[in-house]
Image (tube, rainbow, N blue to C red):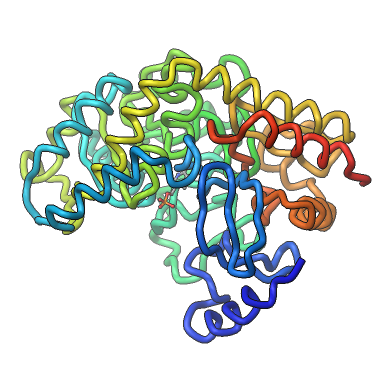
Length: 419
Ligand SMILES: *Cc1c(COP(=O)(O)O)cnc(C)c1O
């Protein structure tokens, strides 16, 4: 594969951006390669600066559930842009999108639109603290909730890959109120509630997807619902990945659990920088200027981003077999991985092959994966035209644009992998 243009671009990019990237997960360091620079993307395919074509299973880390450059989304954004890029004032699209979100996530009785998943989660946690008047929060090892200070503890994903357990530049005081529990381990949560009576909230990825895919064991989310309720703490679902992905109503619909607050991102923005957080009325009524929890944004509810989100969710609503199709296709890939002797976790259209013999149910079992073996597998797939995450601790995202032929090609290549 000729990657000379990407290499030239990488050399230039490195002069201006740390490691040449604007987000660490894009660096190919952990897989021993240089990042590919993408020129364009359409449907299930991405094309790099050297004209190489790949079947893409990163899908921009989740947003592109209908594939790249989905025409109704592109058209909606194009039309919106003609009316101006940003107003810094109210517009009807915000209401239409809020109505759509609320329809599918009834637990989000009130919500705010923001610009990134990081912002959504950070704001949800602040509202939870403001509402309860408590400071401490519980998060799970290996769950990623964006890069805000208080949540950068055992954050999985890029942090895991780059072996940074915590981030420099985060004063210890900022994470003192962040308590850590183990995913899928009820006793670890009980212990924290026994020791502390000032826990504002438990935040969780209802399906963990930033230490590789780790589904919740049966009863785990129900347990979190119960224990938070009993202790006057809020339950926050970080559905930045799972929202509109596991089902149209996200993990809360899929598992039938109503959290107090929810953070959405990725799919909700249709590929534009847009995210949302929301929850029960009485909690959201604490947010400024109704209440005293401050949260704001110059570009929040940006018309072009709102148009993209609205168009993508409307399209999702119009595809009755979307989730059964995604599930069927992902199951075929899962099966191919199993045929190749790989250890797979899957939840709907999210899946990860872990290079370990242990069953992966939490952060410590995920960490037993051999990242060198993953790097070899990644390189094999890439050389055969399959683009996946350059990290063991990420999900493979299946989209509606992956055709049966794409899936068959992918499965054949995976089955041809020799460990
Ligand atoms: C991606 C992600 C975030 C952060 O979203 P950004 O838009 O990258 O800031 C937060 N939580 C989860 C679960 C995510 O996967």
